[in-house]
Length: 167
Length: 102
Image (tube, rainbow over all chains, first blue to last red; front, side, top):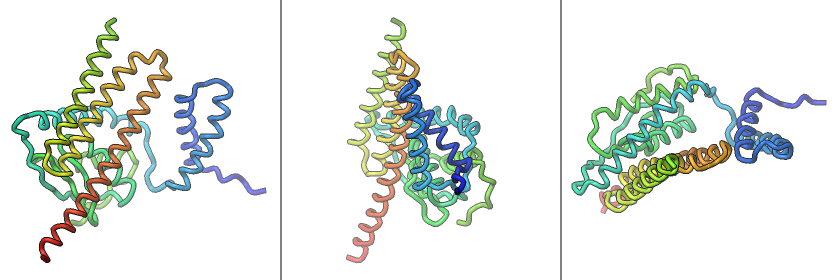
């Protein structure tokens, strides 16, 4: 008989889905049994859709990012609301290109998702190793903001500092 | 009583941000600027409403469910914003190309 292919990553995902299930369904005996089945199936499906990559999620680092992220997304909402309501509508949309050393794919998309909630920036994909960032207003700090957030994400994902990307 | 008051303030604040996001959608001049308004203001609006309602949730389980809704909506907003931003950029470039060859 073949040993079941249970990797620690699969186990981690099962636990994660199980916790979410318990939060939604409750903790009676029936819920727990159904939850174990569903969490295992969901983890298996997620493995088929998103196989584990180089990134190892560091939950502590990720949790440490949360307050800063929430604070900046609060500022982002306030900033854009102010510009939308102001009768003069103070915006001057433009594009900047920011080199990234994140690998193409899910990680860049994650960084891009974050930036759609940060003040003043919006990512419209990347060309080669350059992120295409849309800025709502003249903001000299936007470039540094992107670089700093990328470094934070890199730490939370346990990625080693890569060589700087070529422009 | 105090909780009810906080809920009212938070949900009203949330509605204000949804209104501001909609105003941005109507007033801002191009697709990408409009996306700024929708994602950022609406995310904050939903966050405030979720916080306000979580105070009335009764059980921690219900509060967690509300926060989960917010988290999923945030992920969905971030993903769709990028998809729309990307396809709008590509179609803008195509249009520019068409103008140039004309």
